[in-house]
Image (cartoon, rainbow, N blue to C red; front, top):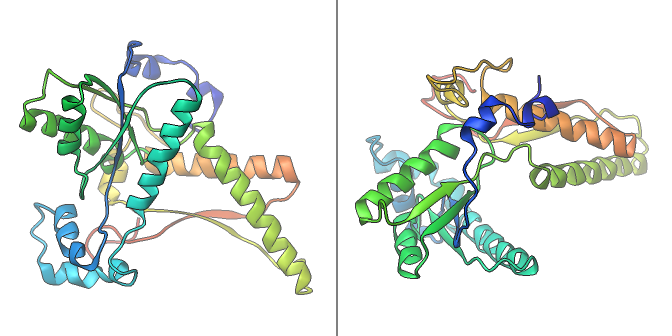
Length: 277
């Protein structure tokens, strides 16, 4: 059964167990991964990301070329600035007077300082929105752990309340843009093939995502209290496949066009000898 199936996304014991009581928030925290903004930031940033794993700088330098090729700048910080501005504008359009703060796990602005800024500004109940839609340790629980540590270390535990939104892989606001983009991209490819005189050439759609270690994938969406099983081995994989399935279904329903598709991974996780996820 797909996680996008109405039977799953409708009220059920699992969603009810995790449902928070209604409350009035007075601030929004946009929490993200963070990234370097110059060549001198690259190695310090990678040290933050790999902290506690004993990875030498020589190894970090080997993987730094992804950033160095772009001037040492990751696009994520500017994307988050744009997202923050868009969130502020949307809240204002809806007449919701909540300020939006931004904090990162691995680069400035860091989450602990952002929480302090929120508290100093007089806010006490915060809704945290992360930039990770799917279920796995680094995209869900690690954010909650980082918030807990930051509250404890800053002395704000019990003074500042932070609630995290659920993983939103199946929310219409997340899925609809993929439907629109896939439909437009498929139409563009069809037009290019027709112009080249090969309208019947095969087309294959790739939905690309980040890989995670197999052990983390297997733990995603499970706990001792809820040892759920997934036909696709984990919530991380199942959610991606469910989203892809829904996108293709909607594209075909709305345009009459479709194509075979696959879920692929952009990067390796784990040691070199470990198979790709």
